[in-house]
Image (tube, rainbow, N blue to C red; front, top):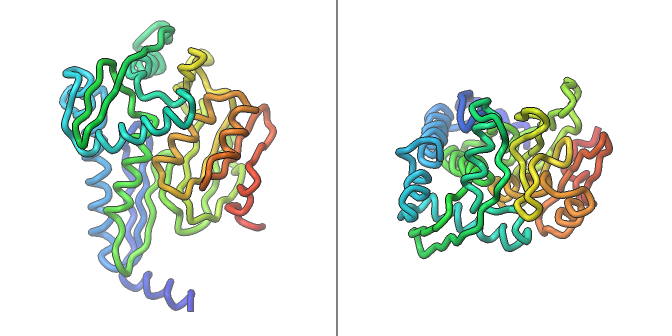
Length: 289
C-alpha cells in the first residue's frame, strides 16, 4: 500500500527549489499534484517574509518597529508573541529585546565592526492584537527563520502532495531520512534523523570570528555558543525548534540538559567537548541502522 501511494505521488510531479534566503541556503521539495506550483508559492512566501523581517532593510516591518517604536503587522505580532512566551519559559535567556546587540554582533561577524558588543539592553515590548509597541530595539532572528520555514511549509501543503522546507538546519518535518551535519568539518553526519517533528540546529561553527559567534545569553551578558552543536526536534513547529536550539546553545551544559529534558514535546542532541548528550526520547527520532 505504501509503495503504491509513493508511486502515485511520483506520477503527478516532482519539483525542487534551491535559493539563498536569511543568509543561508533554502531547499524546497514537493512531490504530487501541482508540485511545481506549490514550490514556487513556497519560495515566494519565504522571500517575501525575509524582506518583511530583515532588520537590516530600512523598508522592513521590523525596521519600522525599531525606528518608530510601534507597528501594526500580523507577522510581527505572531513572532513577538511567541518571543515573549519563550522569554518567560527560559527565564530571560531567550530575549527579543536585544536588537541592538544582534545588529552590532552581526556587523562584527561580517567584519564591518572592530569589536563585538558588550552592553545588553533592557526595555519593554507590548502587544495587543496585531499592534506591537516597544521602547527598545527588538531582535527576532531567533524566531524568524523558523517562522519562515513554517509559513513556506504551509504554502507548500495541499491534498495529494507531500514535501518539506529546509533553511540552513531548520526544517519542516522531513519526508525521509535527514542527516545532522557534523560541526567538525567531517562528511560523516552526526546522526540520521527519521522523524515527523520539526528540526532545528544551532551552533557557532557556521558563523564566527575571533572565537565569537552569533549566540548570546543576556542573563549573564556572555557571547558565544557553549557547545559545538545543538539539534532539537519539536512537535509544535519549526519556530519552537529554532528558539529552543538557540536557547540551549547559550546555556551551560547542565542547564541546557535540564531545560531540554523538561520541555514537553521536544527532544535534543547537544554536542559538548566531543561528547553526545541526548534527552531520553531523542533516539526515537533517529534512523535505526
